[in-house]
Length: 149
Image 1 (cartoon, rainbow, N blue to C red):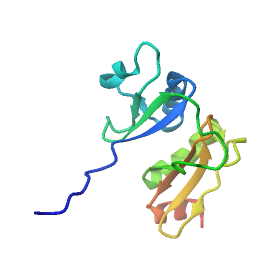
Image 2: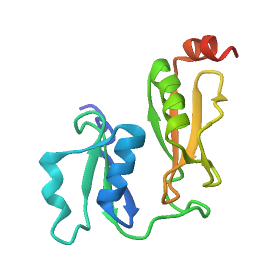
Image 3: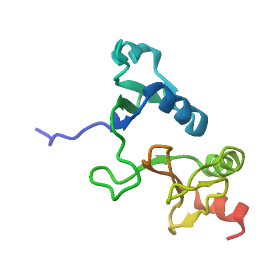
Image 4: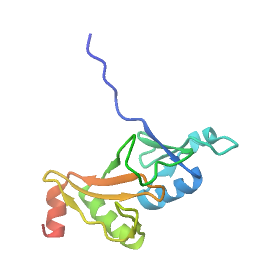
């Protein structure tokens, strides 16, 4: 008998003041859309979960109405990282130039400085409720060639 292992991460839960406002921000910023087949879970009191995804529901964020973690020191999940292709990474940086996000300190910026991790490139930012986020790619050669690094 083989050892048990999970197939993948199904969802990560976030607390936000308004699930629909948060869903709109995540769609505008990262392309995560409301999954209509699960929208009934939100309930009449709009407390959630409101499931959003960029891949049709294979991986999801579950938005619940509640007190967000904010910009203090993380006590639970430290950061949520989203993987993209090299082209997607470069497009995201262009997207942020026209659609500013909060930097690591929560100040609005349209310029996220890429961090070269050797085998990956990442940019770090916050959603409007203080959740730390990351967009990362492992297509380092494509990114280096474009950024001239």
